[in-house]
Length: 316
Image 1: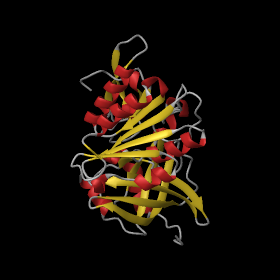
Image 2: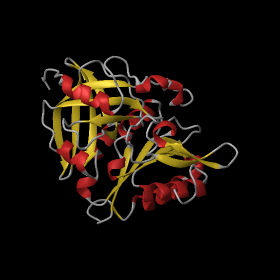
Image 3: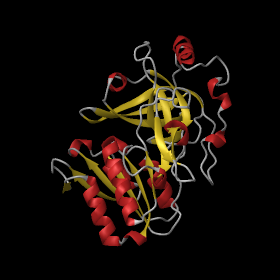
Image 4: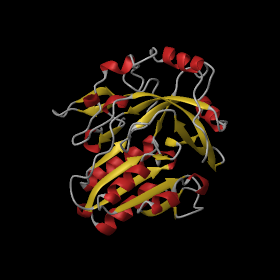
C-alpha cells in the first residue's frame, strides 16, 4: 500500500466528540459501558474506543458499492466476527451522526494496522462514503455489539447472507475453518454485481453457493430456497448452526426455516442506529426473555447478533 498514516484534523475530532458526547481523553459516554455488557460466553472483547485513521484504498465492487480500507493512527483493537463500528467519514454536520458498519476485515503490515468496510449506497451517509478518496480522514467508535459465537454442536456451519449482509461473515468463516469446521455459504442478491466477496469466501475455505433474483448467476430465486435444499441434502441434524444477516424479510424467513427444522443459529440484525452504544434507543427490537415473554431491547447492546430462539416468530 505504501501510504503514510494520516491524522484526522483536530476540528473534525472535536466536532465528532461533541456529537456523541466525547471530550478529549477517554471516551466519556462509553465509560459507563462495561465490556461484559457486550460479551458473549467464552468471549473476551476489547473495550470500545475512539479510532482515527485515513482512507488508503477505495475499491468499487459494484456500481453502487465499494470497499474502503482504513489505516488507523494507533493500533486497532481486535474485532470479533459480528462486531461493528460507528463510522463518520465526512467533515460537515449534515448528516449529523455516523453510520454503523460491520467489520469486513482487519490486519496489519509494515505501515501499521488497517480495517476494511463494505458499503452500499442507501442514503446520504453512504453517498458521501462513495465519494471518499485516498487520504480522507475518518473517525469511528468501536468495537461495538455482541459477536457471533461458535456452534454448540457438531456439523456443518451454514451461512446465509443477502446482499450487503455479507460483510460480517468473512472473519467468521476464517475462524470456523481454522477451528476445523466445514462451512457452506449461501449468498443471495438481486443480481450478479451485488454478489459480494464470492472469491474471498472461497479463499477463506468455504464452499459457496449463489442465488440471484434475476437469474443472472447461480440459482434463479431467493437464497432461502437453496437453504431448504441444503437442509434436505445434509439433514438438519448434521448442521451445527445457521448464521444469517441481510434484509429483514430474508432474516425472518431464515429464522422461520431454522426453527421449523430444529437447527440452532444466530442472526445479525439490521437496524438503524444513531449512536451505536445504547444511548439513543433508535434500534429497539423485541427479544424473548428466559421466562418466554418478550421485551424491547437495544440491538446495539443485546445484538446485533442474537440467538434465533430469542426472536419472535413474526411481527419483528
